[in-house]
Image (cartoon, rainbow, N blue to C red; front, side):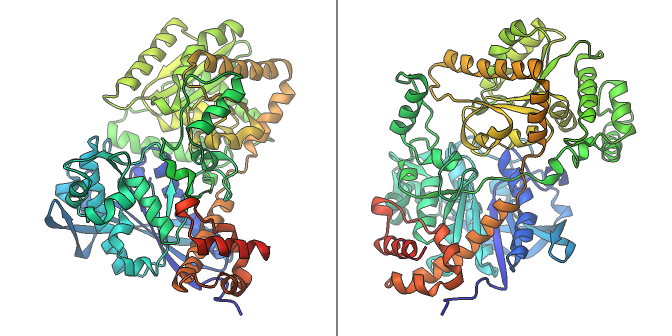
Length: 631
């Protein structure tokens, strides 16, 4: 007899995240991919759950940042206690419901998604749209702890069957939930970028550092937080989630971690160095280790669930390619900035984009040709002449994105193919010296190559869409890329990606050009590898245009949908419920538990992954073996 019905009838999940997207609403932030994912994921989860016979309700928990207009939010009765540096205080909770149309088995249905925001002026008064992360890690530790206490208090009051944490900023939540609730409620952690781990130096020792953050330092520091005599919040969150039966996941790869960021995180320094040596045939001068030398990643299993991208990002559905959407955006812009405000600086481009839709797909590539013409007018100020190959670049000027490599090969590309063109829209964070240096490099390049290189450091959402829709190629030489949404964004608009083969970027191998490089100490060697792929792409573009168009069509047809990934997350939530039953049984009879899983055995087997060495519980290893015997 099975231990339980195949699925519960209903489930409530709390998604905890520092960023939730929805920046246009005034009640969210999106600094990077984290915000975009947390915005898109809830409706996809509901849709996937319905397909599995589960009525899932998703509630999103996040801080209430200082620039939010709380008068437009609904204040929730009651207050939520927190303690920092021995001083008790209370958070206020506010809520707003966002409505989305979700494709359910019975047809489209409007579903409300409750967002709960936690506010305390002492903790969050300094935050604004351009600054939501503290630059001082000591401030960060106390802030993340305070918000985690508020979130945990909220979760304890609510009827949640699953807690899903997104990145280390909310990784302290399980430490405040209490062992009684953790024994009954599964908690999972998704890592969006392991380069950021919440590492904080000690003040007065590890115990005192945690004590000031409202945590019992003597009980917790050495077991969870100690990282070379620093506090590491990601390490602590991973350990707590793993020991309580939850799973740690990341944003590209498969459940078995055979590829993508999930596979990379399991590699230590020696493994990465060996891969680098195999690429070049010589020892690497320096390698970048994605897990940042947190060797816990080599011991605890991390499953890959690759991020999707909402269908509205396809060229046939993109709002920024539809005249009605652009007209509404222009109207709103002029209401804020006055009648002279514009979406596009070129009169013809603005007129054409507002006059008709420019949606397209693999059967309507003439529209992409027209968008290339409009992009050319917008950035270079004159009609296309000749047969240019346009390389689009959209991103942030941060070390991770490695966009300086584009500037460093551009002159050689232009010498190789005088009709190549570069359109670069890349912004630097205020006060960031690296970003400022990269911006200066691109401005110098554009000044030296007028009419061939265009650069802007002011992000523009409409122009960013036009760049990919009108470009032949997209350049993505990222040093590391946990998921890589930009490759999907480019591919779905028909810009063939030219990428470094790292992390989630390998998912566009079927429709792009990928170069292998790991020796970050040999910048010149990487430039040569990148340049070789650009030349390869240009050769196909010039000499085999039908072959290039086939790549464009393949890119446009890329399956970037959330369906499979959201289904995996829902199965993860169901697994968590079964894992709690396994823990509640005392883990004393693996054979009986495996036999009793019944129809849920395949699901449970897909997610059960014991840790290695000291992190592998003997009973979990026996259960794994019992499941494998029944496979």
